[in-house]
Length: 323
Ligand SMILES: NC(=O)c1ccc[n+]([C@@H]2O[C@H](COP(=O)([O-])OP(=O)(O)OC[C@H]3O[C@@H](n4cnc5c(N)ncnc54)[C@H](OP(=O)(O)O)[C@@H]3O)[C@@H](O)[C@H]2O)c1
Image (cartoon, rainbow, N blue to C red; front, side, top):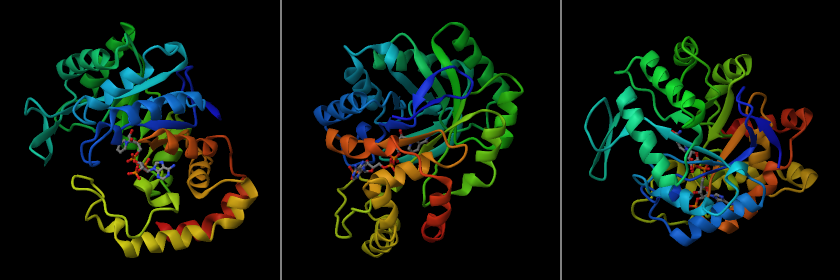
């Protein structure tokens, strides 16, 4: 597995990481505990060392399942990343959204972060978090206040590195005015490449790791999504026009034309999609959402290969049709 440094933290992470949003079940049509634990353990066995979770994923369930999966494993070999700043229980902060009976606020106030870190440590069954990220930025709290609390948690040894997510370069300037951040977690895939213009170069210049979320386009970029697939009730892809039969057929058709590079690198499409992602300049990690051990085993080889710059250039005209 390709290894990279997480910003300037000294923490080595694998270029493929396991994302555990779907494992939380909510908005993904449910979850299966045994499959979820087996997925994470299989990833660790494949050499993937970074696991990304968040309290919001199933209101604590994803963190609990990550905790169960890592129990009994060598903790020093695992990089646990979680997040703070989304509040579904107290109704304070900046209103974010309402869904399935939950009213969610962005809240990065120091007292909320202090409360959340203790909850996450309990659910994860660990006494430190390797990477603690602000999940969505909160316009009602000065970034200096948020960062001050994160720096205190770091001094106390509860977290080893500070990261941000869904954070613009201007907001990162504000964080950096107070202290060091080691990562940002934006949306990025062959389908959504907006960060190439500003965020990626910014992070490269400031030595901040970039952890791309939804690199598989939530399954669209595996090349094997069936146009007739029926997503269950409660799955965020149900009724989403990106997952209409016509669009799935369109995307599969474009991906089909990447066969010369699948053959050259000996990768299937899921793996090529991930190898392409981690080969982008300034891109540190692809955070792949996983649900079961078979998916993890299938995608892992994509984290062992970098695509040569001349091949990235040759693939570009095809991939540009996706975004
Ligand atoms: N910071 C943020 O705001 C934010 C937002 C979104 C995501 N994230 C993080 O990023 C992670 C990844 O993003 P994501 O889960 O949205 O999307 P993703 O990684 O693009 O796609 C994940 C989905 O792809 C399918 N898949 C995975 N491996 C596969 C394989 N080998 N073959 C076929 N299908 C496969 C699975 O769907 P099925 O099993 O249903 O087919 C899986 O749930 C999340 O889990 C989370 O940790 C962060």
